[in-house]
Length: 313
Image 1: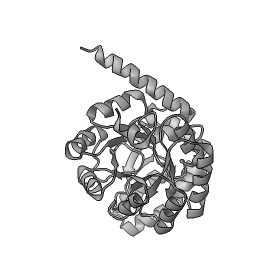
Image 2: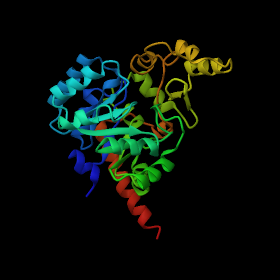
Image 3: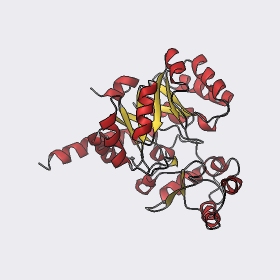
Image 4: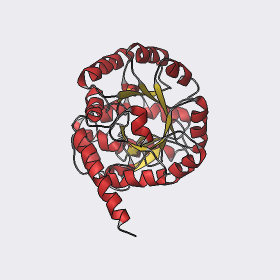
């Protein structure tokens, strides 16, 4: 019996990451309908927009779905009230202290998962009472850990230290990667980049196409002084590198970043000045597929990989 499918009452231990400007109700409901766990990404939504997406998701699927909430969100109290009022049963928290909201959510019948990038934070999340953790390696797109610990290293180290279920994230886009994560100690996997390049993703078509065009070495982790983020190398990225050559202050970096850069790149499709967040695994993504096709292909690849590994001995 798989601990993640049991925890969420889903068919496959595949979670769709709650990504900004990508993970609206269409993607979340499509993933849930296909047997995985879809997540609405609250990080790019005003509170009432989030409420609308939750309500639409409830109409679009009868299967479990959740909401991903970065806890640095300015309207966090209002967001949490909406979660409870709308009867959301699964919440993934990130970018903050899990002690802050876990008790409140669990008292209101919510299953809580926290995203971590190190063993230290995994232990803190377990101590806070979360039901599972997402252990996200350096390969992942978007906001990331500062220590640059890879998924291949992180998963077994976290497994050694905690008892609650582990969801592996970062550098996983197919069944082979899923099998590798499970062998290392994960109970399930979370995919971001692969679902960003899906039919139901709310990202701009320009962004989806640039994912397909991104090759090995085409992304880089940067802006550690603010919040570490993995970006596709475009003009905006090169502007960051030029600024680093001048030994900038945090204020200089913040001024260059400005506001709504990720919206500009991911949602509006500005491939020059936008912030284009994607994982290293983009080099293995060659086709825009439906969420259902992604999941079914992944499970088929997973089963095939298991057979091939068994044949080694």
